[in-house]
Image (cartoon, rainbow, N blue to C red; front, side, top):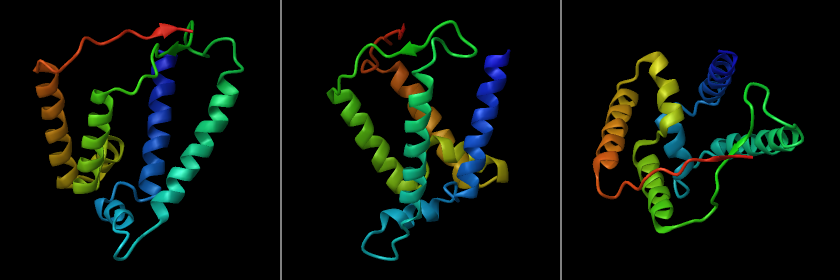
Length: 146
């Protein structure tokens, strides 16, 4: 239960940060991608801040013997970059550039009822379901506890 509550709190803090930084506004994201027009560099600062917080967090967490609410750390077994991963990253980037939304900000945008967020999440959910049913879906590897 405490694990779920801590995940909820972390998600709410993340969502609040996205709202405060206006990353739930597709126009803001698209302005960042418009380097030849009215470029808005604020997304770069949001990403930079996220990298700093992540780097500090990892340094602190890896000094711990075990997670606070779990028996062991779960770490992926492979760090291999294959075609499927690269294709997925490119597809994600194209979708992000076209819609100005990615999953986290789209979920946070639901809080104020924007139709684009609902359409985006519906399309994303349909795409995930179709992929899971496709022959391209590989068996999922189970992470190993560290």
